[in-house]
Image (tube, rainbow, N blue to C red; front, side, top):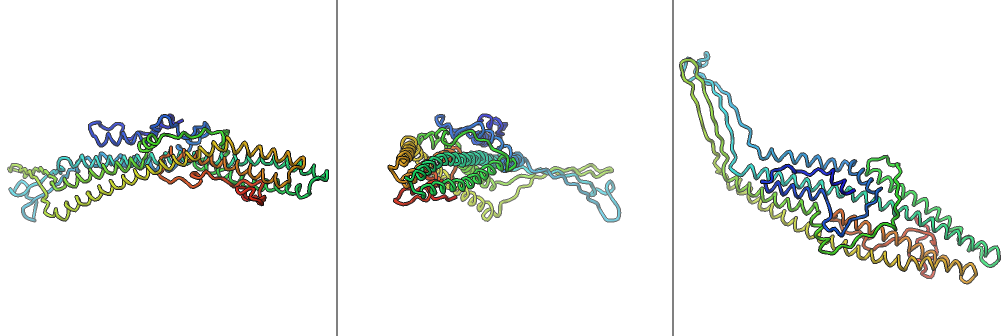
Length: 473
């Protein structure tokens, strides 16, 4: 899928002449950015599901933000040859006549027509500097396009993970209904046999009713996630979105080495590339401001036919402006460009620092989430399931109270819900790494927290189930 995306990416400045270093640099930077391929071959990026690949391709084809960024890039590209062109020549037509009574051309020596052409020639190097600055500005537009493309794909991936999370919670709800149905059956048998309290049966029925309430909320959440995905891919909001993948079955993101992760982020970050292009552009503009001390030259040539017996006259002139006010014009321009270069350099340093911080934050968060997921798979989920089975079996024979069953189910729900939330958070961190995002790692991704699935709900006494809210939507 990623190869197919690269094939349709327009690489700007691919046909620029290699002898222009600035343009060659822009072409290289823009091509690398738009391709957006991870440098670290051991890091495959977030999961590529066939259905997800289709959603991404549809979004890349439909998003108006991408069309806007592409149009801005085309506009900047059109500026490059214009900035490097000569000023338009000036053609002047004139008439000089002796007296006001009649036209005296051919009769008076001082009467003639005139045709004058003038061409301004900028001081050597100015045109190249202007074109180079425009090329670098276009490179920044290419970086903006790369950022838009990465963000669109990342938004689709996040929405897809959110949809999988909503459907994973619905699946958990279905499994929970089976557990409560079994609990209700045991409570009913014990009550009819005179061995259990009616409140146990009523409580089991209450929890099953709460599950129906929760299902309504989860179905609404699922519909919202589907609508978000359909908006991104330009489809009707109620169009179905099929997801055969399960959140718990997605491959875990790869934890890259710190140096490799940083190198990948620095190579693919549109913000860092734009900041570096901004420094180069400020350098070009500074050199241009310094060359403005040297005047442009205007060459004029003209011919003046006098008619009759008089030979035509001709004229040639060279005009050079004198920088009398350089102290308040050219010098100020140089000072302005020096300050701009300093600002661009500081901006690039700031972006590089933030990028390094985000890479470290994401690696720390992902390391914690992967360890949490291993703990759930290898211990907590197995133990929670066994605890529920044991509590139900002992409740059937009257060894434990129904409160113990509630406590066991509360722990089971909390663990399953937290596992799904941690898996979604790990995928979001991987998506942010693929996006080369400068946004901070969210609290949910960092903590791997979950919560929100009821089912043992109101059972709170004795500190039994701190993570299972009661029937809350």
